[in-house]
Length: 311
Image (cartoon, rainbow, N blue to C red; front, side, top):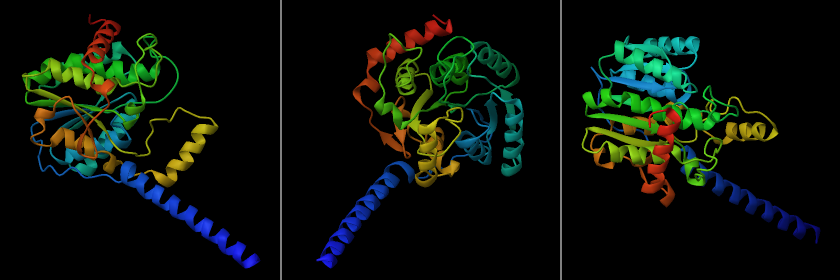
């Protein structure tokens, strides 16, 4: 009968609704809901560089560290946006030790200039947070693919140029903001300059930890959580517009929540034996075999050195 058909349709819709609700709750638990950093450590007398800290998670991270008393270097490409961010952070934290220094990770020349200025003007470096990243087409000033250049080669060069100062100030840390997306990636050394599905941040951290063993400098990579940011600000097209619409519904907008795992890796006491490892949601996470393969990590390091002119 018509009523029985109606009841069956209603039951189907109830089942569909139930499945969608369960799927949403699972998604929220895995990708949106985040633990908070529980460390009570303060950073008075310590200096921290946070790249890409003029907006989003980077700015939230810089604010949280300024609130704990750190001298914070807001390192980003735009002079105006960087100075405005530093001013905001000083006002909100009550900490006047927040300064802007211009850094363009798409230019090796600019990176070397930043480091030269930093080493001349700052006596300490206790934590380097490689937070900046983007997802856009094009080439860097040095002819590298923009994603590869800014998200890996830039931080690789910056970190290596600052290692001596980090060693001088040991115990110190390097924190590399990566993404859960590394689990879907791979590395093809035949087209690494333009390849976008990379494990570079995680492999770099793995190899860096081996090279720094016993020197008092530890390093960590992490997934910050699903926070809407300006990472894909230069992307457009129908697909990206659809993703942006979905993200408005599903993804958290609280940048401070997205900063918690970065803060955990920066501040948490007792994680030094976990140097080189990967964190998510303020806890240690395992990674796939390729992301901790010693041979691949060493080869990536050698290739990166050659591209930076360090070899």
